[in-house]
Amino acid sequence: MKKNTMMRRGFAEYKTLDPAAKKRMRREFFINNALYIFLIIVIIAIAISRPRFLSPPSLINILSLSAANLPIALGIAGAIILTGTDLSAGRAVGLCACVAASLLQATGYANKMFPELSTVPVYLVVLLVVAIGALIGAINGFCTAKFNLHPFIVTLATQLIIYGSLLMYLTLGTNNGQSISGLDESYTGFINGSFLSVGGTAIPNFVWYSLIITVIMWFVWNKTTFGKNMFAVGSNPEAAHVSGVNVTRTIILVFTLAGALYGVTGFIEGARIGSNSAATGLNYELDAIAACVIGGVSFVGGIGKIRGVIMGVVLLRIIFVGLTFLAVNQNLQYIIKGLIILIACAIDMRKYLVRK
Image 1 (tube, rainbow, N blue to C red):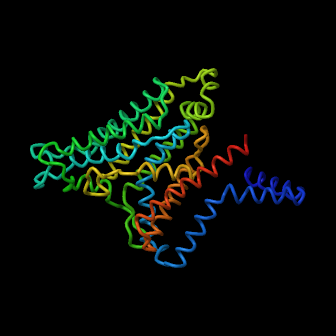
Image 2: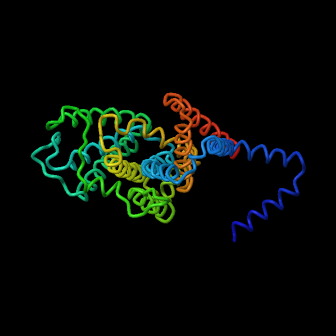
Image 3: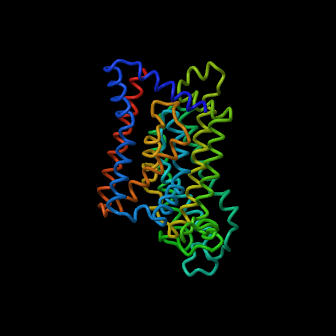
């Protein structure tokens, strides 16, 4: 009701403006929303060209891919709100996925990584990989806050450290660097199983897990002191410090929470992919960063909403599923992804300069 009243008031004010002012407002609207308008046009064009694009199996595939990428995007969004980023996210996902897969291989599987180790209970592995991810995030946050280093440099370094650790881990036991597969049904069923179908197409369980995580993150961002402190530090760390916010602790906690979400993503990916290697998680952080920027999480700090992250993840996934439907070359998709990030950042900076 309140939102409708505000919209009517805004429209009434718009009608009182002179033609030149109306023209400027229309121009600003189209510039600020250019990326959304472009993406919607592309989606409509793909749907017309390939009607199967909007079929129930395709839509559930888009939903599933979006849900799989949502936890990592929510984690990176926190780092971006602090005017930073996290380049180690993808490798953290890969490490957590491989650890989960190695501990949850089926007993008796011929190429089991640790033949003498029986299959570990799923809930213990969840806790372990979330702890690994949180530890990685805590290290990123500690180095950023205590040594006053830019997150770009810190996470670039930890990205390499994590990748080296992953390569070493894959040589343990009898694996010799091979892909980890042959997962136990308790793991694959927990992630890929389903209790609900739409149009004969099953919705995987991990979609609901991502939904639960998203609700929790919405609560953390909007209803807790920690969330308020995160936005305050992102907007102006000096002012936040003067106001009594422990800036160092807030930065460490934001990155720790992000790392825990990378652990969740890795656990989901381990079973969703089914065969994990050193390539698991490669460039996942790029998709997450692109989704956050598209969703309005600003690199200038202190700006971002959960619904924006969700919208960014879904829109980006729709675009790339659509490009696959159109048989666009995979290499060209990387170029398109880069252009989307560049355009979104340019629009975001323009908004910031206008507000300033």
